[in-house]
Image (cartoon, rainbow, N blue to C red; front, side, top):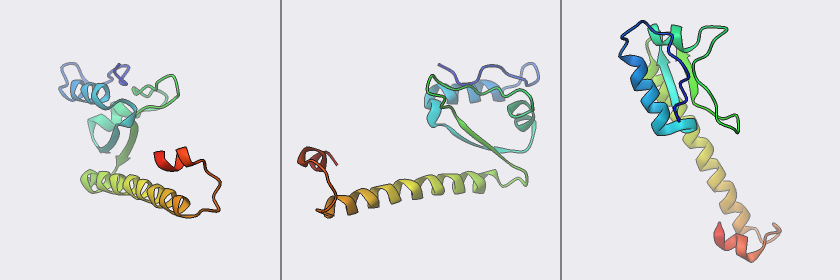
Length: 111
């Protein structure tokens, strides 16, 4: 299911089919670090927003960088995401080591 409901781009724009395909491939896990340009106009012009969500209210993450540094901006988004995952893994490891944390043996083995 594509998470791009409509395209507000110019007729024949080659960018929107690629974004639609990305939403189909990655769905609600897609993170878009957008550079300022056409895609920032059709991708986030109030009051319309072409991206949609699933039944749980989750959809692609979209953010715009104004100063042509979207590669660095996207890298920062990815690093922040990885940092949160690493911290969660550390918290789980600490909980597993702490016998005072109430947890069934079955759950300990799963984690």
